[in-house]
Image (cartoon, rainbow, N blue to C red; front, side, top):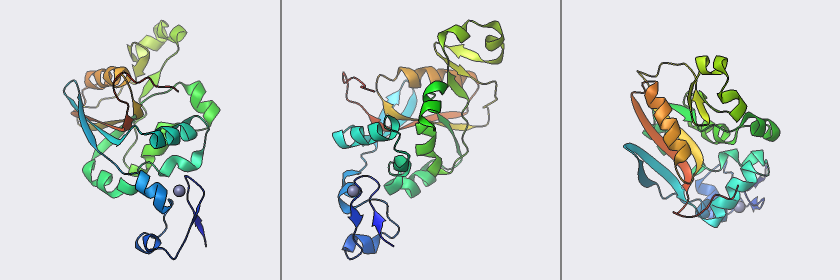
Length: 207
Ligand SMILES: [Zn+2]
């Protein structure tokens, strides 16, 4: 059966050397080469963070197609080349996806961050939510959640857990910082951050 590249829809020819070395591939040779990771290390306060890619036009467009144009098939391409390495590196961690508004997830039909990082096959803890302003002041909501700006964390004990906080694009870091703060309040044993791409300073997120 013919395989087609999930990114550019080009047929993956089965007589190239590339297809011989990588069976069941989902990317053509060209897109495979463009998805070359940089594993950029940075810090968010005292927390270690890694950006898998540089924020190139290619990555930017890919994230936009997936997140903004609901191209669900792209969910696997982001981690595809490095999945084994990532699974080993974060073995034993619990994944906490960066929250987005429920209404956006409903419109899209999926949560884009959850879908990207599902392939790590680590336990997912979607315990942080983004809350609309009117809910934040509600007393019953405050009782159930620890609220921090527009984010809230469920009442769970993370004392024995190593947490990997994941997101697609890291821009100003304000989301990550608020979420790290909430995870610390729940007693997380260790926290690390993994993002698909980190924008360069001063660059604005467009979507
Ligand atoms: Zn391609």
